[in-house]
Length: 377
Ligand SMILES: *Cc1c(COP(=O)(O)O)cnc(C)c1O
Image (tube, rainbow, N blue to C red; front, side, top):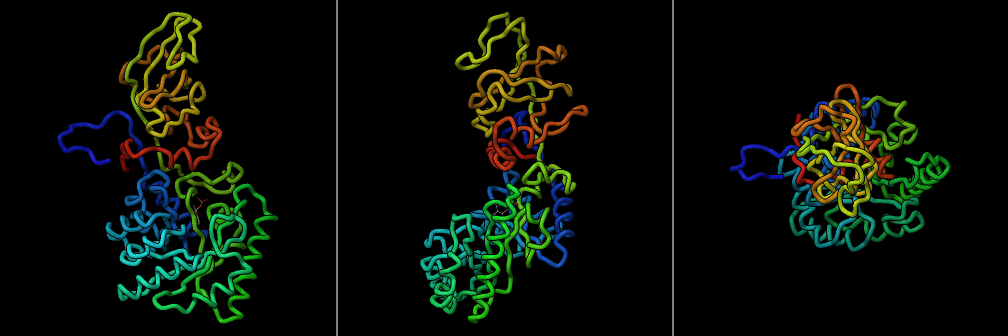
């Protein structure tokens, strides 16, 4: 978030982004990819880490391509001077075709409307736009169905201004380890490519796998793997933690804004969902669900103070969260509190927070709002 230049300091709540750790993770996957290309998927503001600094770091560390879902993110990366191919991994509205072409982004195409809009814009801007055909093998978000792929290519493969550089699919159930479903989807994708090829429709770059495939299934790499969440230090699923060594990229820190003692029987926070049993020491931490620190953490989570765990008590509010520091008598106004990351040998991971929330690491990281200052290391 841009701060007025008249401020002399940040507030205490900051997300630390370790770009060195991110680059190490990129290099780990680049090596694993071997002859296949590596796309660093940095959608959703790089899963909350900041799309431009992370995009630059990805390219520095050897990512061949970048993937986002919004034209706006692609344009931001181009404006920052990034030259590698940048894929828009989502379908877009046809009125966004002009910007996609102007910023030399690579489109995902699965509808005649978008194929036509891109063609018109490419011709109009005197350019060729690189496009990847998206095949829907079972996720059912978007994509051409395998049985309609031939008709689609007959109608649109030859229109002017498009370079059909690739064809891809995205699996529905690889993270869940449902290999039967995933293998069926993979076979459907390969059969579709083969059938299109026989009919004269060629797509040089074939790709299907995301982080899970990059970690578990070398046999499905094809010409490129598209890694997202794993580059930020977390394999999609806990079972994969033992399969690869990655470095968490984001830490989240604040300071105790106010520490005070309450007598027994005091309700704490909105609705008084927590009531003190004895004399208890309560601390206010300046972060809330307005920052993306979810309400699901109400009475359900921990933070580190002096390397010790303090329970979240009461409801998480928009800007504040309360913790119980009764067991940490030395805790005082201004002390550092670690919400995610290491402190004095203990560690709270995004995975642990996701567990408290009943969610996944992606939501913990990408859900952190931009009002939380990112500090890059
Ligand atoms: C998000 C996304 C990815 C990356 O997925 P991860 O599981 O985070 O690695 C890859 N491909 C597509 C099409 C996506 O939307």
